[in-house]
Image 1 (cartoon, helix red, strand yellow):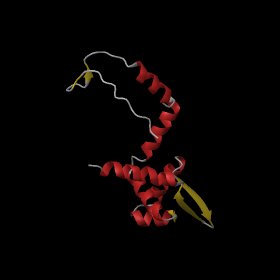
Image 2 (cartoon, one colour):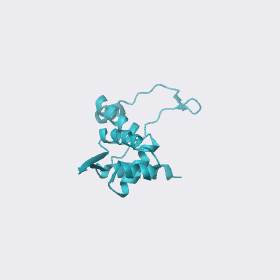
Image 3 (cartoon, rainbow, N blue to C red):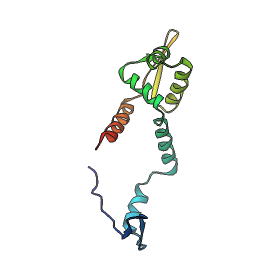
Image 4 (tube, rainbow, N blue to C red):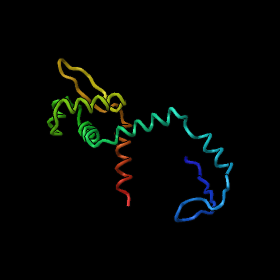
Length: 130
């Protein structure tokens, strides 16, 4: 259950979006400081979202939503070179968004877990809002 958020108001200029009167809300600062993740976690989160900032990687993830595939299938499906696909897969794998398994001479890629689909679904819902 999400905590009810209090609205803290100070008078501000609607054009510059700056406070006209300096009024520090100690209560709010205390809550923020208590709940704000540490710098390392914030950095890691920002780095994760950077991975989603590339449409080629998003396209790869959409293919992986449908099936576990090898690099050559991904390359054919996306009309890309195997080298380009491998490069993007390496980034996705380093960021724990995809995993791989070897079968004979082939390596198959799949989503690392259900969180990947959830992140993409949430992003799609957000951009489709009116």
